[in-house]
Amino acid sequence: MSFRTTLPTRLTFLRLLLTPFGALFLLVEDIPSHFLWALVIFVVAAVTDFLDGYLSRKFNAVTAFGAHLDIIADKFLIVTYLCVLQAKGIYPLWLLVFLLLREMVVLGYLVFAARETKPVPVVFAAKLKMAVQGLSIPLGLIALWAEGTGYIGRALLLRQWSLWTMVIALCLGVVFSPKRLPRSISTLLRNGRIT
Image 1: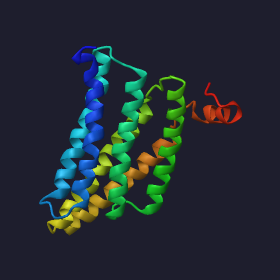
Image 2: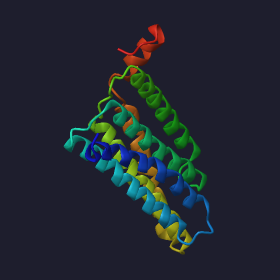
Image 3: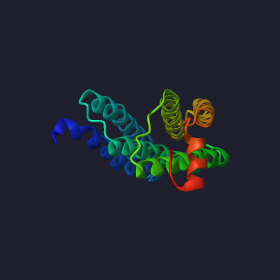
């Protein structure tokens, strides 16, 4: 395989590797500007998400493995930041619980789809949900940075924007879940196979 055809998967692995460092910067408050470093890592990881999809289509390097790995890397990035931001008070616990439940159901579906080597097409609503989450998390990170620098009024406003954009993302994720998901889950429960 050429470098061009493996580049999208390398970018996905880079996103997986960057995610723990983002969490580290969020949690270790002794690091100067730690919230801004966490923001930079999140933005770089989000750019790799765009690039791996674009390059895999451009170089005709779309594989079932790469598609599933991309979704897992996305969920790892989002869930890691969600958990840490909830611990920092940006998101309420109820929102985190609903988001995690939804992600676990979809990830379980994807695992069984991968077992049967069925690629799951990414729909526009999933991209929209990811984009809204990709807006909410930086807003929360900037709110935490603003609190640390004394911009309390702006921080409160950013916290509200971050919260409500994540609520919108949750609604998008529930309303526009993969169309085959309910049917596939019921089939899986009946005979252990996805149709």
